[in-house]
Image 1 (cartoon, rainbow, N blue to C red):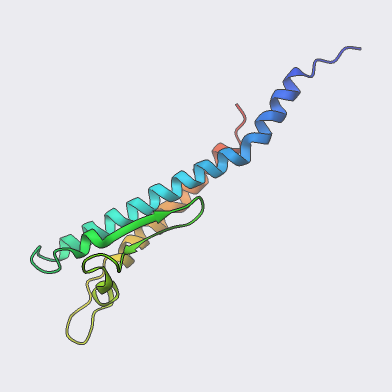
Image 2 (cartoon, rainbow, N blue to C red):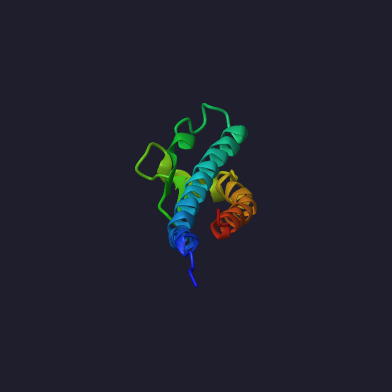
Length: 126
């Protein structure tokens, strides 16, 4: 009896590379989501204020992502970036200008679908 195992070796290689492909896809989703959150926060903020008020703040909102973790928000090392908490939540003298929370809420709705697509693609064997 002769058995042709060539297809089995190809299947084994395909399955063996699935985790690395999935991690790369997750990293891409995290990066794109983080950048999208940053851009949306800037857009929401700019839609609520005139340019003369806090002209540098929107540009201080940055995004950083690694393979599994992404964050966006004002960078306190940049012009007006240290004012993020006071802007988002307000103070005794100024009303809040919510922009980070709404941007994160939008991202929270989009992220599960994107991750589900990654999971579905990870289990497909071509």
